[in-house]
Amino acid sequence: MPNHSPMRATEMNYGLATHPSDIEAIHRLNYRAFVEEIPQHPPNAARRLVDRFHTQNTYVIAKCGDEVIGMVCLRGERPFSLDAKLADLDSRLPSAQRICELRLLYVVPEMRRSTVFYGLAQALFADAIARRFDLAIVSATLREMRLYRHLGFVAFGPEVGSAEARYQPMWLDFDGLSGAVPHLVNRVSA
Image (cartoon, rainbow, N blue to C red; front, side):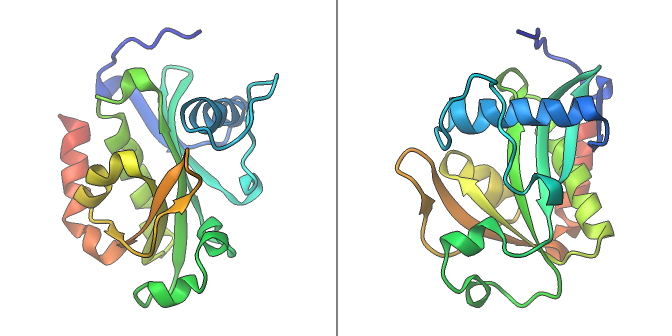
């Protein structure tokens, strides 16, 4: 098991996952997140979980040295995972030209009280805005509703998921991020 000692934000690197070892680490983090912590998928001997949309995902990762300690992904192709969970998804959203879905947010438990999340969010939002998405949707875990609301996400529709893994659909208008992004930059720089 890797040693996850607290690190300063300056020792972290954030960016897009491109190296095969980073992709393999993502599959292992997916397993930790969505099999071990949130029982959404059954266990397997390989202890890895490849997302069903893996080939369409753009992954943003946080690395401490060579170790991937956090991830989140962006996907701009329909159907979104929320399309399967909510009937007539578009009628529940504000008008937008380009919608993306943010998924698979995970930070190793040892680093959750650090600036890792803020670094991931900053890199993710910068990539989404550069790709000209104007609205993001998420299935927010109920455990982190306060965090999502703090970033400007707005709840819509009923909760979705199983009894063991409940989520609240939420959206974020990227035009409203002008206030949130400098806040994220300040958190990462602190």
